Length: 449
Ligand code: UGA
Image 1 (cartoon, rainbow, N blue to C red):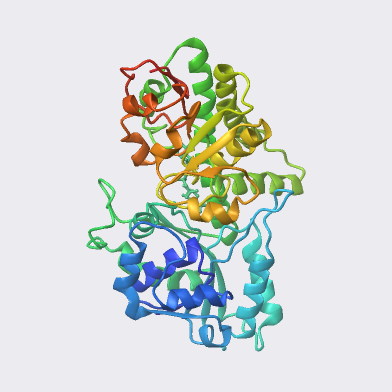
Image 2 (image 1 turned 90 degrees about the vertical axis):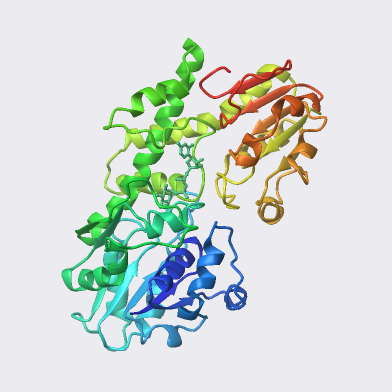
């Protein structure tokens, strides 16, 4: 099939490369010419494990352009994967979505074409995009243009595995549009499908469930899934706080409850709380959608509150031991919102550094892949860059482990704390697994070593 992907961010790139790998002819369109130029050279603007390899393998089926007139008329399926960044009131900014829908409409050619909302868009956006198409298509055909919602469930860092071995494929819209979407994904739904070896296959993986539903329900599924995961993490964090007070161990508690099949083990890791571009944005967006109907969502509001409190807790622990932070040297290990990505959006480390700046501490930060990006995106924060984790730790009064990179897990913490001015580690991701042999204070979340 001929597929066009509008927007070459995380979701667009991942989807486009995956579909090209499945054998479709894919055109990636972005209005940013520098992005398109670098993609034409085979350079990927983001860090995602395995993506460069898969892109190289699918190269022959991938084309890049900034031109709607080139990318739209021949496409059987057009994915809208543009950003919907949050605004200050918690609502997503839909101007990119609107612009993309208009430009698509103006270039449709009258044959049957399916327009797919893949970005996470507010509930009701599918209908809205349909209306934009209806208003702006040169020659509108109601029975030829179908808008489908096909939300994305991939996680940054494991995007390839999540998209090639998905648990489910959610398709929302009217039947004629869904039939084509099934054809598009047919190779994935096949029992014998096998991704390249560098894409880890989940244990006991079988073919994905295909959920066919209405536009609105598909949009709701995406938000409800993210909000539920956010809720699970905040729940674990709330329990972790109580574990600290009563002397229980959160790891053992979550392991214990996770064996209940109805709860499960995943997304119960207590720590600095959730960050990234999705959970914060989607939980807030769901609450504002509720607000539009005069409907409160207290459970979600509480999940957000717990997540915010979790970030303050980390600095509170530092203050408990160091008292005055003015002039103290604090090493922040990990800047990305989670390991295996250079994405800094809503990263806990950002808030830690901002608060340390306010309190007058000297911050030395390290991240295996996100430092370059931070130089641009976190120019408003004051911190020194450390070339290695060791450089950050040397002479520090305290270390905060903000992201659970394997590199930090594997550090020999016995020798590391010896190089500190004061042996205090706030392990906000519970990466240190055993008590140290040398005198040191290790603060973790929800347990004591
Ligand atoms: C999330 C969802 O997991 C994806 O299914 C969804 O497609 C995506 O949002 C999206 O809407 O695009 P992502 O934000 O990439 O994916 O990252 P996650 O791996 O879900 O982690 C989110 C945050 O939760 C991170 O800050 C992570 O450190 C934190 N987390 C995760 C915990 O604190 N504890 C856990 O047990 C799991």
